[in-house]
Length: 147
Image 1 (tube, rainbow, N blue to C red):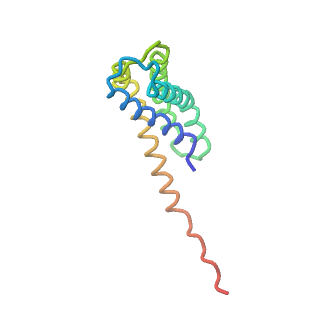
Image 2 (cartoon, rainbow, N blue to C red):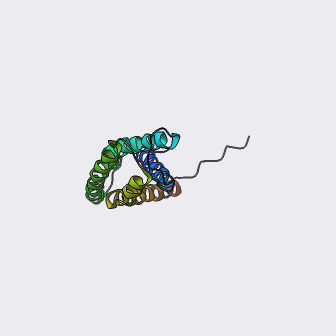
Image 3 (cartoon, rainbow, N blue to C red):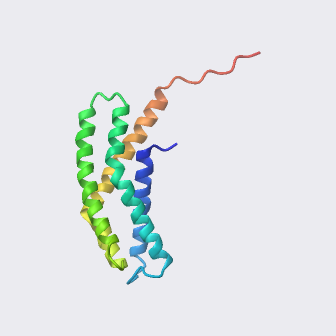
């Protein structure tokens, strides 16, 4: 079962993948199209995921007894700055009356959004490695006793 952080990262990554395909369509407007409705849906969903990512990360590290908690907290401060910059960019796009493929291409190229995505790739990889390590360290389940 994915954690809150993993779900948020997935929503943000799904949005980015959709915006890449939207940018490639060469549309001059999002008005009246299913792609335009999907675009605004994905952007709004990603925006909500981004707004809570910092709190979600802090909750996760405080739930574990980490010896190097300050290293995580320092990185989460970077994540928060990148998240706030990405929020501003996405909100700016969402308030536009029309969203063209070119506008989305420019959003995708935005260094703030790319920094956030890279932060999230790093976090999800760390989570996966920690989960694999924990699973490997767990004692094997005992076999049922022979009758």
